[in-house]
Amino acid sequence: MPRIAVLGNPNTGKTTLFNRLCGVRARTANFPGSTVEGRIGTHRSADGRAELELVDLPGSYSLTLDIPEARVCRDCLEGAIDGVMPDAMLVVVDATNLRRNLQFAAQCLLHRLPAVVALNMWDVARQRSSCVDPAELARRLGCPVVPVSGRTGEGVPAVDVALDTLSSLPFDSDALVARLQKLPPADASPAALAAWADGVVQSSSARAPSIDEGREAMVDRIDEALTHPLLGIGAFMVIMAALFASIFMVAAVPMSLIDLLFGSVATAVRAVLPDGILADLLADGVLRGIGGVLVFLPQICLLFFLVSLLEDSGYLARAAFAVDRVMRRFGLSGLSFVPLLSSHACALPGIMSTRLIRDDRERLATILVAPFMSCSARLPVYVLLIGILSVGKPAWFAGAAFAACYALGAGAGLLTALLARRTILRGPARALVLELPPYRIPSLRNAALVTWDRANVFLRNAGTTILAISVVMWWLSAFPRTGGDARMQQAESFAGRIGDAIQPVFAPLGFDSQLTVGVMTSFMAREVFVSTMGVLAGAGHDADVADQRVLEQVATMTRTDGTPVFTTATCAAALVFFVLAMQCLPTLAVTRRETGSWKWPAIQFGWMTFVAYMAALAVHAAVGMAAGGP
Image (cartoon, rainbow, N blue to C red; front, side, top):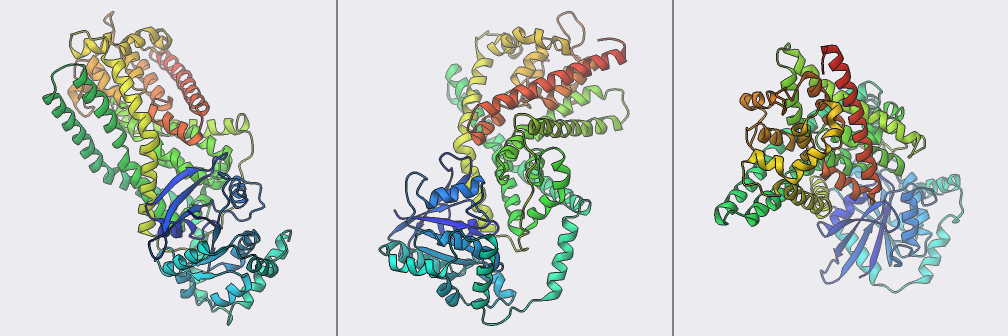
C-alpha cells in the first residue's frame, strides 16, 4: 500500500483534510521512539479500487527546529519511521496565509519525493478576494497545486485524483530535479526563505489582493479583548463554565441510562444464574466493571466534541494566550489550562487532552497534577462529609466548604506543578508561540471524527485496564465468603482485612478500621466510599447521600469502644484527604497509557497520597486542638 506523508504548519486545517480523506478508517498511534502522537488512515482511490496509507504528521513551523514535532516529520521523510520511506507527500498550506506557509512547504519539497500541495481553506481565501492563481503557483513550485476546503469538502475529488496519479507514477527524477531548481537552497536562511515565499506569492497573483478593512479591524478588536489578561480570562471562564454546565446536563442522561442498563443486566444475570461465585463475578465484577468503563464515555465524548469545536473555531488559541501569564508563574503555560479545567469534570479526559501541549516536560507536569482538580466523582463524598460537618452550622457553611475544597485542590495542583518544574521536570515554562488562526465556522464532521477516535483510544487502552482493576477489587471485597450479611462480608473480606492491617497508618488521622476500609475500597473509584460507608452503617449498597436517613446513619456510626467515628476533627481530616488523595485507579491507568511508563503513575500516586496524608494530619491536629479534644 503506497504511503503518503501529510505535512503542514499548525492551524492549516491539515487534520480536517486528513479526516475528510480517511473518515473513520484512521487510528491514533504514537510514533516509534517518540511521545508525539499522529494518525494513520486508509484512503480509497477515486475509482475505489486502490488504497493509500496516509500518515498525518504533527504540525510544525519548520523542519529544522529542535522539537519533537519537527524531528518526527524529518524522520518520516527520511524513512526512519518503521524503516519505510514515504512514496509521496501531501503538503497542506493555508490559502489565506501563503507567505508563511510556503516557507515550510519549500523545506518539504526539497526532499526528493513526489508531492501534491493542497491549497486548503480555499473557500475562506475566496471570500477575502484572494487572487492566487493555482496553476501559476504549481509552475513556480514544480508540483501539482489543488485548491481545496477540508471543512466543506470542496476540491477533495481533485485531491483524490492527484494522489492516485502521483502514487501510481514511476519515480520521475527529471521532474524532481526541475522542482529543486525552482526552490531556494536547502541551507537557505529564514530571511532568504521568507523572501523566496514573498516572490512566489507575488508572481502567482493576478492582481493585488482586495481587503475588507472594516472586517479586519473588527477581528483585531475582538482579538485584543479575548487575549487581554483580565477580559480574556473572564471570557474564558464564562465559556468554560457554559461548556462544563452543558457537559454535566447533557451527559447526565446517557450516564444514568448506562448505569440503569448495566444494573438491569446484572439483575437479569442474577435471576437466570443460581446464587454463587459465577453470578457474583458476572454481576458485581464483570458487568459493574464494564459499566464503570462505559459510564465515563458520555463525558469524554462530549468534552472532546466541544473542545474540538472551540479549537476549530479559532478561539482556543486566544484563550491560551489570555491565561498564559498566570500559568507561567507555576511553570506551565496557557496550553495547560484547558486540561486542568477539563479535569474538574473528570481527570480521564483532562489527562487525554494534554496532547495539545507540545513541551514534553510541561505535558508530564500537567498530567501529574490534573487529578488534584476536584472531579465530579468527588462530589458524593463532599456531600456526605460536608453534610456531617454542617450539622448545627449556618446555611452558608456548606457552600463555603465546597468552594474551599475546589480551591484547595487547584492550589495544591499548581504548587505541585511549580515544584515538579523545579525538580524532576526542571525547566522554565516554554514560551507560548502560537499563531492566532482565522475565525471560522467549525466542522461538525471533523469534531465527530475526533470524538470517535478519542472514544476508541479510551476503550482500547484505559478501558481494558479499568475492567481488570474492577474485577480484582470485586474479588478482594467478595472473598473469603462469610455467609453473613453485607456488613459482615465487607468487614471480613480481604479488602476489610487489608483495611484492618493498614488502620494503624491512618490512626493519626482519627480513622478507625471502618473508615480505613472505606478509604481502601474508594481507590477503585472515589464515589465507592459512600456505598461502602452505607454498608458498614447498615444502610445497604444503594446508599444515597441525598437521603437524610442514610446521612444520619453514617454520621452516628460508632467505633468498637462506642465513641463516634466522625468527630469534627476526623470528618475534616477525611474531607481534606479525599480532596487531595489519588483515589482513582482508572486515572492511574490513563496516566500509564499517556506516559508510556508505570514510573509516572507511581510518582503521581505516591506524591498525592503523601500530600493528602500530611494535610489531613495537620487539619486533624488543628481542628482537634481548636475543639479541645481529638
